[in-house]
Length: 154
Image 1 (cartoon, rainbow, N blue to C red):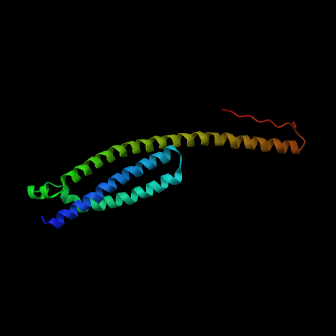
Image 2: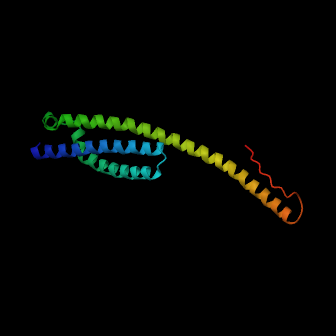
Image 3: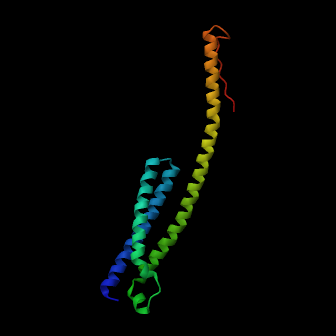
């Protein structure tokens, strides 16, 4: 293996490591955006995650031979410390990804619950609105009481 090829692999591995760390940071930003109900920040973070994931996929294809078992001469030629850091960052990213997925799942359930609650109340509000309209029509025609009442049923 030539010195240039080793250098190129190390450069790709360093970029891959940096992208893994950046992706982890973006996932943290997304979780904070969800926690603080900041939709624009979440959308921006998701877009950044997509760009980084696409680049990681390309780099993985270029680096794959680096991670495959190779003769001793090739393994010795690669930067073992850098590859170890990539593996550690990848493991940390996987752990973070599981937390992120759990947060998204929990948020989805919360949204579904709120949507269900609001849709139930929406029918109540529409029915109440119709009753009020009917009462106003009766009042305009002189029938019924002139007092308007409001009620809320929980």
